[in-house]
Length: 433
Ligand code: EPU
Image (cartoon, rainbow, N blue to C red; front, side, top):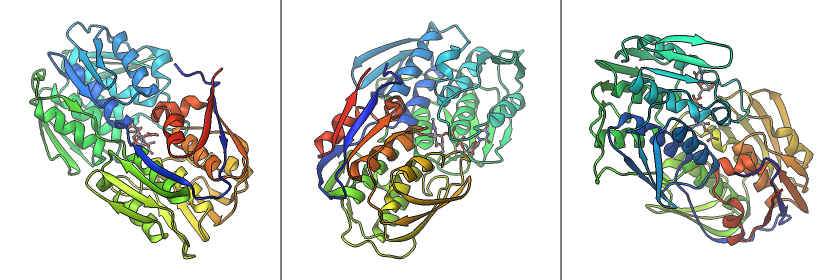
């Protein structure tokens, strides 16, 4: 496991636009995690391919093994999860608290065994991140809820969940995945309204349908799930993790900032339609193909005000908000960022200001950024995965040396980032302690 003390050292380009070459996108963090959790819906092993080698995947594997399911690696990118001997229903506390996506296991485990215990999930410090939607939804499905101060326990006296109607008051990615999976093993029909439309949700839903799940409405905001028995996977029903659109988007923004020419390979440009359009409007030259994006940093950014507002898919992703703020520090004029999803996701601004960025924070959701400003290398520490990658990008364009503390956060979502960035011309090294 990466130590929390690992850090990156970057020698900045000082504004030069020199990055070039090809960079490949890994499998999606936010698709592989629910796909792994879905193993508990099966009566036989499932196989997942295109697995990213990231810390959150390792933590998820540890949790699944703790429930006594078996995990084996066929090769670096392929794993098989066999749920047949799984019997435990308590998610290991310390591991669960390290990443919020641990909550995705709760639905499949409760639906299979009629009981599950878990701590309040942890993860990035990007806001309150409540779990009310989960607790309310499971109670609607007939589970009782008990909190002993350290762990929550959900239990269904009959051993089964009941199909029900759940109207989400807001769109939640992991809540949608959770109740979609719980509905598959519930008795009767589950209707979910106002569900998330993120490609990760859709792709896992399609995988489950290919294994016999009866889910209709995929790709719309209402899902109807006919409950039934455990699913069966076949040799044809492997799940191939989709490319990580947030990783691709991070590389795209880096290209817009600092590339003479960069090709982002193994990605799905359609998943980034809005960020691509916005970057084009700023002057970046972008060409897209079926599974690649070529980008060249714009010569003259237009001085018109650029404004983004994060939004559920297909809107501008909150997970690209911090990288895009770094981009705005280099754009001519005054840009605005309105973070609508999380209330703690602008916490990293003070460190960008320390690097010389001209940013004014109006409230927990609004900032304005005046550019362009040549950033100065500094020592900073990202409070979450995406702020972490944003600091790496800031370090790359800055003048002088930057130290980015807490590499663990970046390793949670980006596989061996320093090795991949070095190949496109970034002077970055990891210091391991
Ligand atoms: N929310 C509630 N109650 C709940 C659940 C969510 O109020 O019970 C709120 C959240 O506080 C937030 C909003 O709903 O204001 C939407 O959050 P969502 O539940 O969709 O977030 P999530 O499912 O916890 C996933 C991704 C995040 C990504 C968000 C938004 C995974 C494992 N995580 O989180 O990814 O930012 O959706 O797109 O899929 C990341 O990759 O860096 C990351 C944080």
